[in-house]
Amino acid sequence: MTTLRPDLAIIAEHVTPAARILDVGCGDGELMAWLRDTRHVDARGIELDGTNVSAAVARGLSVVQGDADTDLANYPTDAFDYAILSQTLQTTRAPDKVLGELLRIGRRAFVSFPNFAYWRVRWSLAWGGRMPVTPALPVSWYATENIHQLTIDDFRAFVAERGITVENAWFLTGNRRTSAAGANLRAEHAVFLIRR
Image: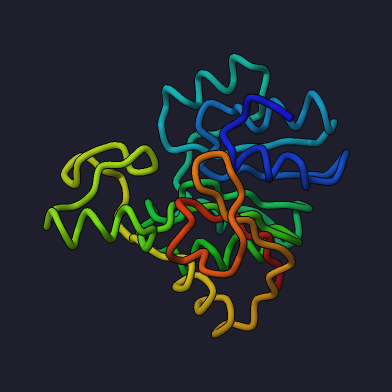
C-alpha cells in the first residue's frame, strides 16, 4: 500500500477520509503527510524533538513542540476524530494518563507499541540474560527511550479494567500480520483502535 512503517500503514489504511486527527509523538510527520495527501485529513501534530518538529513543518504540516505527558491537557474534549499515538506509549512517564487524555480529545485513538513479550525478547532474556537488541528494539538498554515496557496482554488487561472499547487490533511481526491467537508471544508490535 505505502512505504510507511508497518504499524503506520495499518493506521493510515483505517483513518476515515477528511477526518480531524492529532498525531501525538508524530516524529517528522511522515504519517500526517501521507494522510493529508491521500485521505485529505485535517492533520495536527505534537512532537517532543525539535529537529523532528522542524522536519514536519518543512513538509507543510501543523506541528507544535510539546510533551504528551503534560501538553495534551491543553486540547479540548472531542477536538479530533482520531488521536494517534504510534510507538510512543512506552516512552511516556504516565502512560495511563496519556491514554486517558487521548480518549478525551479524540473520539477514537490508535495506539501502537512494541511487544516486550515477543518470543525473541523472551529468548534474549532467558538465554543471554541481557536486555534484547532487536529490529523492533534497536538500541541497548542504556540508550533506549522506553521507560514503561509493556506487552500485548498488559494492554488488553489495561483497557478491560477501565472499560475501554477495543474496536480493532492488529498484530505484526516485521511487516507481516499475525493472528490474535498467541499474539502476546508471536507479535513484535501491536496496533489497537480504541474508544471510550
